[in-house]
Amino acid sequence: MSGHSKWATIKRKKGALDAKRGALFTKIIREITVSARNGGDDINANSRLRTAVAKAKANNMPSDNIERAIKKGTGTLEGVTYEEIQYEGYGPGGVAVMVSCLTDNRNRTTAEVRAAFTKNGGNLGETGCVGYLFVRKGMMIIEGGQTSEDNVIELLMDYNVEDIKADEGNIQVLTPPEGYNEVHDVLVGKGYKLIVDEITFIPQTTVTLDEKKGSQCLRLIETLEDLDDVQNVYSNYDISDDIMIKISEAQ
Image 1 (cartoon, helix red, strand yellow):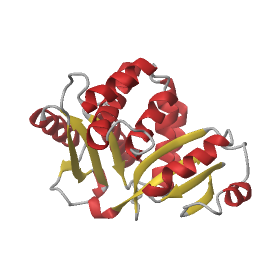
Image 2 (cartoon, one colour; image 1 turned 90 degrees about the horizontal axis):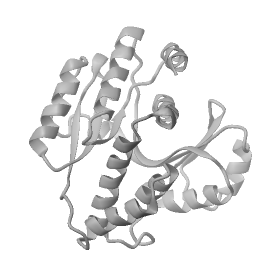
Image 3 (cartoon, one colour; image 1 turned 135 degrees about the horizontal axis):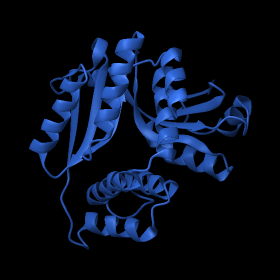
Image 4 (cartoon, one colour; image 1 turned 45 degrees about the vertical axis):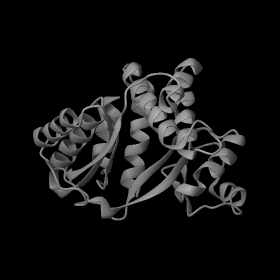
């Protein structure tokens, strides 16, 4: 899990410096719209919508944008109908990659995802080829220096938590998906800054690559994430410390 955690942390640091805020907002709006369409507009009853709205607020999205996206999802306002698609494939060195998309044009999205794999040393596979390697979890990472692992364990001992551990100076909390919202509220209520805060797919096993293939794999992930229709990319690549140093130097 360490590689996944490292990459998740890198993504958030990069996101904070990313000038493509409009593209980020587009992805969040799509998620809000689909969440509202599938589960209704009651945030308290629709955990997926609640998570999407929390992400929107964390990225300073205006409330009007959030409300419009919800209304488009419920049909109160006219909007585009998005389809949920998940692609699976292999990156350099046989790394497993899953790509979650929301699209209004399946053919376009499939072509773009396939091209991203092909141009970056990977190949798009069949549905189910790597999905079994991942488990769905709630993940929150408390930025280091705010509290201790023991304090978090004590705070959450009566909640639905699967794992709490120190991770490179930060504190990682894992929950089953159904326990995510309650634990999230407890941590936010204590005022902790969360550098990762999401329901995600975590690899059950990881793959370590050499520097060349590792760099290729990161390019594949970044290329996929830059596609408008892609919401999330998951892989079982365990990022090496050498690659981490190079990424830090590039920021």
